[in-house]
Image 1 (cartoon, rainbow, N blue to C red):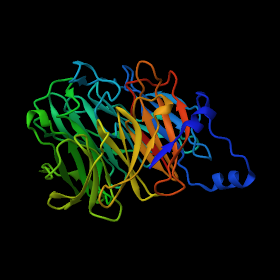
Image 2: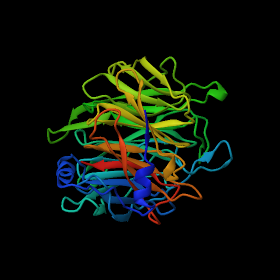
Image 3: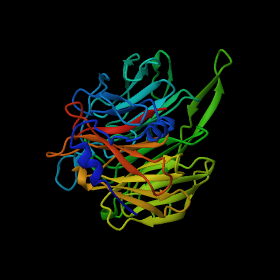
Length: 412
């Protein structure tokens, strides 16, 4: 189903932060009852890497926020098609930053480190660096997962030295990263992509396993794979439980997949929804204990160019996916990846969208822009249920972030 957002854009008139006006008191009351998050975050991924934090208002829209340096450097992969620095989609990954509890973690691809910052309980846009960025024993880290339950942060790196590494964290900051679980990509630093790179690291619903998606390269007859890393529990000197990642992961290439990218655990099931830039998306049935996975549903998106990012919405019990080169968002089934709806956002002038995150009744999608379009976050209202997503705001990031921008995290 195509949703026309032209009327919204005319009302917004291109002004940062403008939203559709509600005409009646009953509509305002309805808006006030919708579930929202507290703030949206992204990284600038510039030479001085910073986190942009934007408060979420009562109606789900965004307002001006803050920019906080993270103590590291951003970087750009090399676009294999042009041999120039990549952008938009500078890191070719999902989850360049993530939240666990009241802490936010951000990768620094240009300085091979991971930063940890605290989030103020009074003001979610007030961030503070905790300790020093932790050195990553690999090159060009692009994706991070963090577990509040295990007090563990894990990073996927995709440069000349590539792999998966984890570190414990506490209120004092990050500990030392553990031994790298190498991934032989045969890459350079910076890597040439977007294919043949590490895509997305994320924890299972119960946080007992870490999954990492790795893209293949069909042109080179190289198949991507999914890594599963068990999280072990042991007793510390004080008798408290201490979590660590298993030294060896299990890897599988589900039949029918090739360029696995952004993925989402489907709550209450053993399934993972995974985008695949070579065709669209698939639903995988996963055995966490063995790391084996098989395709239970697969859907091609006919007009896609690079479907790479995914966000699960509890409000709609569906997954939304984006494409860096097509300005639309596609809603898909969690059961078989079939298409529920497609919302055309071309009238907004955005070339496409990358990272996205759903919170409450809303969806937040990052468009890093290009030479003619500023970076922006488009807000979608999902309160109507499946197939009824509608754009309510295009928040222009102005000079806070540009085409290097990456990642979306939401504090709920």
